[in-house]
Image (cartoon, rainbow, N blue to C red):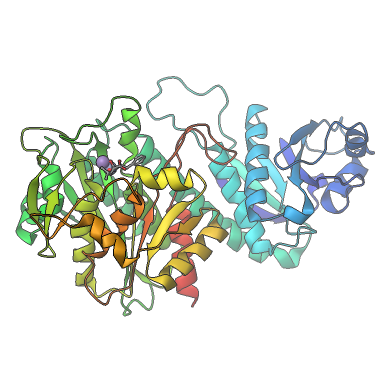
Length: 500
Ligand code: BES
Ligand code: MN
Ligand code: ZN
């Protein structure tokens, strides 16, 4: 989608659709909406007076100008209660307006910057949210459909502001929003691709291509090299599948990159059958999305490169398929990790932590200032937090940085404790530790497990996004299927980091 910013009056724009807004309960719109209403001789006020439009968040109505203004139609979108207004509401409302515009066949959308006026948001934040909502809301996964969609996507989005002094900041926000949202859509595509298409080899190819376009560096380790380095915990997962693993390393070296890097580690199990500890058949198709952490890391690096963040960032993605083939681990097997710790594999379905363990240890090679891993790691985390927040645990200051980044980006995280007493649950009779911790505190014992593989003294946090990777019902900004969760969270974290 082509995105532009222009100085002007929204009612003067020759557009397929112009978008204006209304807070809930407002009877006499002011600002840009008021100007459009005046040009339309009170059509919007009549709609409100009639009770046909209340301004609920995301509510949309269409008004036809009959030649009173050059636009072919006016889309009125609700922003909800002024007291509950936020960037999130802007995303939501922008998404609904954009979907309406598409349904009506609009090829271009001219919109005011919701929230930059009486909403009281900074224009940069507001325009970022408008663009994010528009792109995320319009997303659909059509790659494997042979038929063209009934309605094509609008090709152009124009942000219109009458205040020339705001337009620079609006442009900066719009650009950031576009990069964030398109990087999220990139991660969504990966999550939606089936496992027969998106194999570890394919994921590495996509990473390499993406890196070539955006100016990132990639290194891809094949099985021999993974074995040579001693990443046996990770390798043990790969052994059950005919599809070989790929350890993907992506590096962004922005300005001032003499500094120690931030290492992002993403779980990328292209399909999680459970292995010999086979999963139940119901819903197993969703496990094609078990690479969502890796996709989030890829998306975040894409965004870091395109935004030119003045940071060094390294992404480590141990891609693998978890299958019950002849080479698969058996419950009870013991493997020796890169850290040197021996692990008893009680369940081959707790495969993510085995891959992450070796990746986290190798993250130490980069002498990082921080390590953050993100993974669809435990059903227990999904049970605890549902689809409203990912679990986060680890270094308190990193956890707090992630919490803030989550709040701002709309991709929330919520802390869980790693009390040392939980370590009891992952003690093994035969090895240094085992890969499952029993029924209680499943998300936490997974975190405790990972912690053991981080080289001492390094700041590390773990994000369990098991509940966030897929939407069964869809929301305004996330259609059914892969959400691309984590790209905006990690990008916001990196953005904050670059600014400090
Ligand atoms: N990939 C799953 C976790 C998951 C569950 C992700 C639901 C997304 C939605 C993970 O590999 C897994 O199977 N975890 C087990 C761990 C258990 C065996 C200790 C789980 O949560 O049941
Ligand atoms: Mn599993
Ligand atoms: Zn898994």
